[in-house]
Image (tube, rainbow, N blue to C red; front, side, top):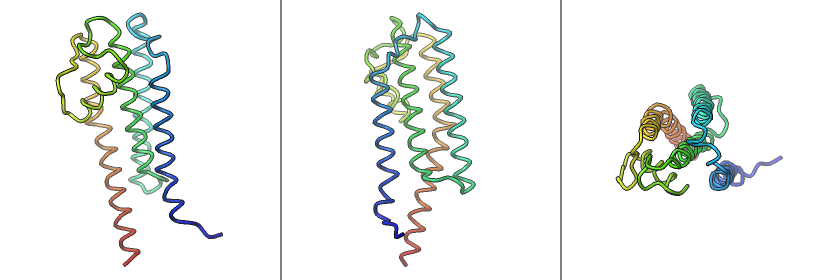
Length: 172
């Protein structure tokens, strides 16, 4: 059976697009405010569980990539980075429901925007954490970005570069 390389090359990007679209649909439709300052212990437990699970997945996928055992590593790492952004955006949205904790964060899009700005270390200053819990959450995201997302992005970059070099070598 002959394989069509161009069709196989589209599987990972299309799968990534579908998965990220589904994730955004869930983010914008799930009743996230069922958590929040009315249920602080439950909210923090859900957030910590999500981060621990996500960290385990990122570590496992990164180790598999470095060991040469990963299938579609760039797509998986990109999805996990996108998932981390969504987890933090959801946490910001939930925590911003408490009056006075966040200045300028009112909608889910505000929360996603703040997450991306924090991840990119741009910090426009239009949304600021005012309360102690939001500041703790920002500190956690910055630390998470440095440790997990930077290593995943570096691994993804090395994988993509190796793939490009391998294809160039096969053509010559």
